Length: 285
Image (spheres, rainbow, N blue to C red):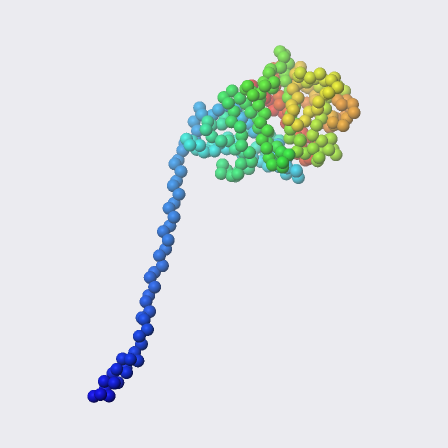
């Protein structure tokens, strides 16, 4: 009997007293993040919300001669959906005139990129009586800039003044050439030019004596305004190092058909970084 009790105690003493393994609780998946609230659907801007007149002139040419085609969008506002204002503007061309919806920001983007793309530039919104041509060009910093050229309204100043009775007005503007001065120097002389008539004389310029010793040159942000008789007018550009100024051979002849009371904007630009071109546009009424 005594030996049996000892045996039982021994068996109890030798038993496994390690803790029983437990099953880990199932992993708790984090709750999914709430979906962003959908933007309310907005209607396009009504016709009577478009203000002023704008157009975009594409003269984008980078330092290697590459060009870019662009679109124009009015972005979504608090009250109206985004809307495309102009499409597929290639280099050397201009869009039609368009208004900008009140409260919307108008941007230029790469063609086909849509309104959510990084803008090439933003347009100034004209007032109701204003007309603005935005000239897209390479700036001196190497980035694309939009040069706002006011054609009508209070800000347009001298450009809005009509020509004398029976005459037409021609405006020459060559701001795109500033960024390409070094590239053009070997072939056309750079970014600034004397403006002649093709007959060894300088073209008469509104408010400036063409025979003045301080005769300035076309170039940079200075425009040349000419009042001319109806018919075909010739403007010949001469290199800035031409010792005879407006006489002799030139680097570009520009022919403009002029009607009485007409106003024509001539934008001089380069596309190949070697030669000059002229884009002629009727100005806003």
